[in-house]
Image (cartoon, rainbow, N blue to C red; front, side):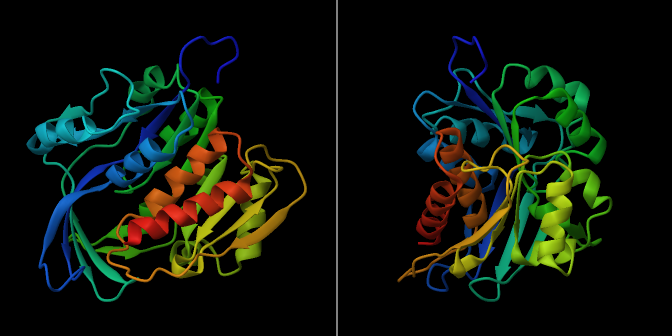
Length: 300
């Protein structure tokens, strides 16, 4: 919490509310339509934040789904009073997901929710204590805005790179691609989360990638490995949040899930749980273990 502050500590959550149409999740139930994107992370924060913390959504929503978004936010218990999404006069982001297997899918996105710029974000983050940024469309902000956010916000910034590593074809199909000016992006975050495929897009050698991140001020790299759990590399001491200490790495293994149903959102649930438990003062190892458990529960 901010030194001398008398109000409840707050975490700002930046990402995209996405309306998902999911094919192949359960052949017996057909197509599923529901909120996705940052909805998974918001729900995870609602469950895992330490007592007293409040959620501040920094989320733009298209005019066509603004009412539905308001209803969803109303289901959250830890939301700061009066919080709402910012309505924009464009169609909301929608994603069609086709699962080929439990871990492989084809994703097609449509919609036009615009990116944040620093003139918009700057005034909104001044009274926050931490930030969680999840690139769910990949267009939440440009590098210049991320750099301004890093310069203008002194608290911890957690970044899930996800769709920063996804390009978009003319038909909306998302495809993995390298990240231009990756080192510049790295320097904007204290903790960075990627999955295994995204890590491979950032570089062929995981240890060199981790070294590149730590050299520009990142304290912890988290790599989710699906059913194998998650790996962390950190120079941030026991809690993984302040760079400059000895480098440590470990695998936090996942427990088997007997009845897996849908992997959609597991990484988002994982990241919000990890971030929440770090804000509670728990060790990095304990926080990652909590994230792995949360992701497994989401799988069911």
